[in-house]
Length: 141
Image 1 (cartoon, rainbow, N blue to C red):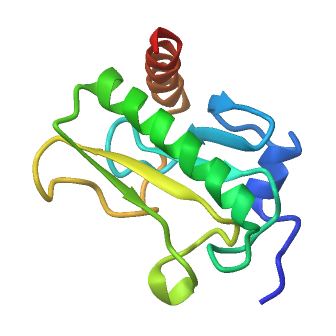
Image 2: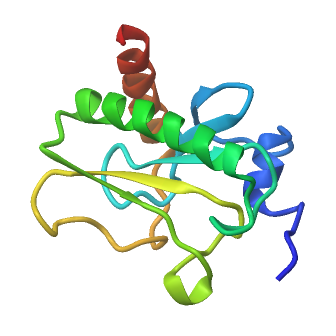
């Protein structure tokens, strides 16, 4: 499959559609998942086009991993989550629904107790409140 430059994440990177931003730097963007599996569910993407782990330039993957680690720490602090799952899907068969490399950061409060993936949209005001908590944790270091 050829990379679709008009996928939703590519459009977010270009500022064509809104997202609830948590962190942005020259190489990556982190934002709230609009259909979260748990409170604090955040996504991290490289800004460079790449459909999956195999097709994204290694330096962009590395930048996304660095941001994922930093944001994951902030999510854990902001939500006092006793556990945290980081996932990344490659291909529709594996569960990938947006074909731009992305990492899911999902806080886990009780083993196995999280909502199904990509099922129910969250209230935008709640997502903004969650993003503010994560941004504060990022700022605190």
